[in-house]
Length: 522
Image 1 (spheres, one colour):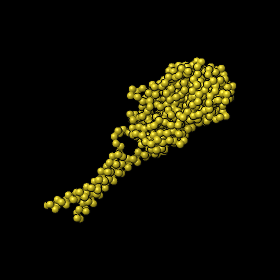
Image 2 (cartoon, one colour):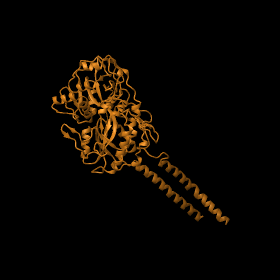
Image 3 (cartoon, helix red, strand yellow):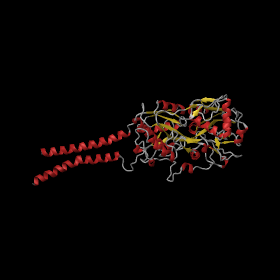
Image 4 (cartoon, one colour):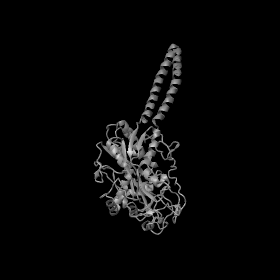
């Protein structure tokens, strides 16, 4: 009997040790997957609504991603100075602005495309006591409004764009950025490219010779300057600030419940910066493909401005994350692991939310090269970076951008002429007819997403709603895509535990009984 007890204890002890090893192994895998350290970034407010939502999304995976929406110029400067782990900007380094060259950082870096969108013209205008929500503007008219040539809303040139509206005798109040911004850089580049004489004449008038593209808007009498996208959109959205108009990412018009102007494109159609119209517009972008250049993956947009596709929004573009490629100062491989996981997330799963947030999902070519840049970040888990696992709404087996391919043609009433569509735009869901309209209501664009918006290869989880934004999404169980198509490691651990428990409880007594019988029979 002593031998029997010893055998049972020995067998159970051995199996218990094996059980402990399996559990510890599985536990360490899970712990490793969530072993992130906080990272901090700064820059573009144009991209901030998307980045902030993605930051909230990845909290469930243990990621702490901090971001300060301080403007593209500040983001580039902070990255250059090493005070942040990453920057976000609509414009790259190396450009000359007001005679000053924005030199490259000494720390090696890459540009990673982050999100596409349209620079929109959000406005606050009423006629006869009712909100106007279906304004249309030609490009030269927009330029004249922001250069002091057109000063009244009932100007004949604005009226020519809007045959269906009765426009008020009210001053045009342009609201511009007071800080150095990518939004200003994108807007001024468009004016300098398409309406150069108007733009440069204005710059001469205010004492800024040969502005060209600039991140700092040269202000003049009658303008209001506000910091960041939140500042300009918030100012225009105030009830008392009728007659104001600003340039801002489309997302902010959706968020504040205000309309945006439809802008005339080169096909003679007035178009809104919806996700599909931006996707069509960006088909005309030329992307720098020289991997040896410091401008690799940056965009040249003249083909967007001049697109002849009736659906194309002419002020479409995308922004970049500026990410380090070496460990330096306070940036370690541990931080790089978090940054690369976050970048992997927004390039793949995060793009599913782009449209509902007021942006346009990145197409497959930009996601592909973006993921290639992510692998260059120190500490990146390259095994989890796989474009085949991306669940992006623009992808197709043929390589075409499905969002652009399926984009609807504009309504006939959007063509330049005597007819004018009455539907509201941006965040305004009401319609306008002859200058009269109902009260403004939000379009619900930020109210919900389709079920499974964050779903992917691991399936969907319960719906979660963000208390700040109202975004509701079905969440995944893992932060980044996995190449496994079978059981996850945790499934095998659970199965192993069950098998070992059976072995611990059942096998020793059976073996001892069998051994005792053999002894008696002999």
